Length: 160
Image (cartoon, rainbow, N blue to C red; front, side, top):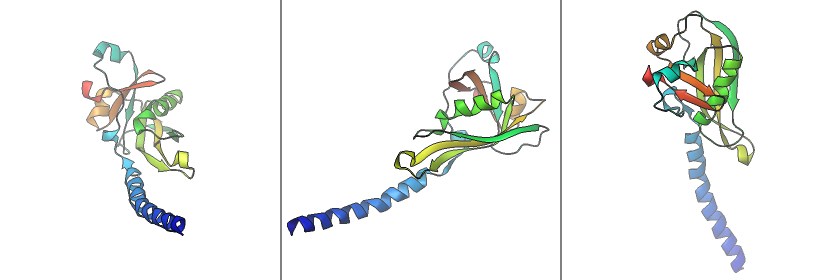
């Protein structure tokens, strides 16, 4: 009898914890704006940065002439931040010979399995912009990322 009362009280406490947990997970799943995506930044020399391949990222469809290469998404199988997916995402655009990404959107997705409950996923369209320059990208409101290697991406928008 005492054991049944203990089980009922434990279930009642768990039931009160589930509602706030669902609310928190719902708030975490909102999309992340491009300005809040944090990628490794460094105080590298401008000469060193000029040797890197750069990719311009817009979170909207800019009014420029470009050729669409491919729309794609990239993500991690486990939890993490959107910034941890950016090297994979930008390097795939580089392999497609794209120098600009338009309609970028990054956020947390919900999965069915518990270990994939919340995971980072980014979307975008890789395009070839013939008249691309880092300065014109910044003037149009885009962000400039330098590909140092296949695992490290630098946000150099503020250094231009």
